[in-house]
Amino acid sequence: MIRNLNDYNTKTIIHTELCIVGSGASGITIAREFLNTTVKVLLIESGDLNYSVENQSMYEGENLGHPRVDFDKCRLRYFGGTTNHWGGWSAPYNEIDFETRDWVDYSGWPLKYSELVNFYERATKVCKLDDLVYNKSVTNNIPIEQSILNYRLFKINPLRFSDEYFEELRKSKNIIILFNANLTNIQINGNADHIKHLDISTLSDTHVKVKSNAYVLSCGGIETPRLLLLSNYVMNTGVGNQFDQVGRYFMDHPPMDNPPPVVKCGQLITNNFSKIKETFSIYYYDNLGYLPGFHLNENYQRRNRLLNSYMWFNFNIPDPYVYGFENSHIKNEDVSSYLRNFKSIYYHDLTKQEFSLVDLVCQFEQLANPDNRIILNSDKDALGLNRVSINWNLSEVEKATVLEMTKLVASVLSTLNLGRVRIEEWLLDKSNNWPLDLQGAWHHIGTTRMSENPKTGVVDKNCRVHGIDNLYISGCSVFPTSGYVNPTLTIVALSIRLADYLKSDLIN
Image (cartoon, rainbow, N blue to C red; front, side, top):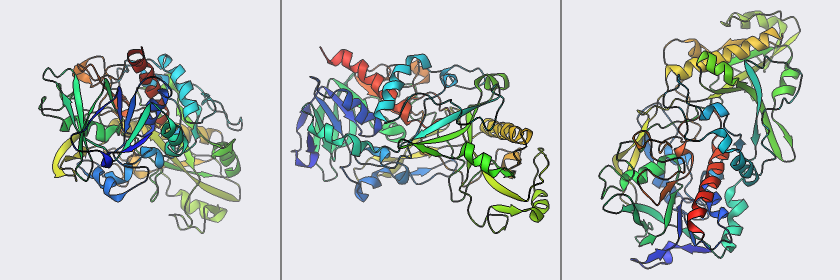
């Protein structure tokens, strides 16, 4: 069923059993798990079925750290959320991502990978993927040392949750989608252990309360902490923020392939372009895309105290390229002048008539740093609510991991006589300088992190806010660490797990 808050009278009280705030991948997934049950579900969406400039402007904010894209570009405030511009890259997190690693500050999930396998399997169906196999070798053309690097796939299916799942939710008899409903306050009781109601409002000044048995915030890694911090009538630091953890540990995946311009780690000059492209190009089968790349072996990470990372080849080199050649294919007579610019330590005999350039790009784990955080600032949105500022910076540890990963891949390619890698100057620079045009990948991770101890996080292993008996959070804001993997598949898996947990309470 569909409802619009503009059609309600001010001071109405809406009663439901499960209230989900936010209709992105997580909110839609949880709601679908309750289809055709006896539970009354209210799915609240700030926007409508389609994009509007007025709603989108509510997402504006400011950067305090490394430059990022505008806030109102990386999130979408209408039904389907950011799945409406999701690139569809999917893979499960690695087992090591869940481990406590003594060389990675604040690492360790309260969950093990083994506890999520069944939910990952269910999530593959929601995301319309084929299976949970991501480590198969696409080809035997290029043998690699498995104790250092492993082949790994990303599967690509840019599923629009709004297109795929709107109709079944609209037709549901126990689920109401409420459009144009902006959460303005989470009202907690005097003991700060139970949510009494939510205050919601339209942009045209209709104000309504929602009373529910359980509440789930599924608003993303920026908006969710913002709403908790804004709700400070009883707890002056904000709901769930008694230990100053809300908004901290903000992480992202800095994309190393985001043109223009491409921010890359290295560049391969190869006289065997066909083999490289055959092995590492995106390929398609049964409406799914598959991107092969190199994954840093988990035992190698442990031995060398590195973060998790993944590297692949970008074949979309602009034409003409930065070195002034007519195209990305270099004639033999141009090679000597080109190679003089190389500062890589990897050499081999390049004797063929034609060479090609291919960029090496990387996605890597970012450390959970409590100083990378979201705070409220003094600017106000259309509802009079404080906007946010984000302090986001990268460290020497991430840079050292990217450099080591680049060297390893370069060494493999050189040993196999497949080319020589020129490592980028910014990466060889020993300072902690990063390219200014490096941006986040719009993966807003960690701001309401999961922890066993409320002094180091916001939610417990069941995604319930510490100390509050009926408030839950879903989405990648609960991830304690970021890994290198795009988060959507894990978001969906954890959302299914949370739905199962809620069913045990809500279904008699």
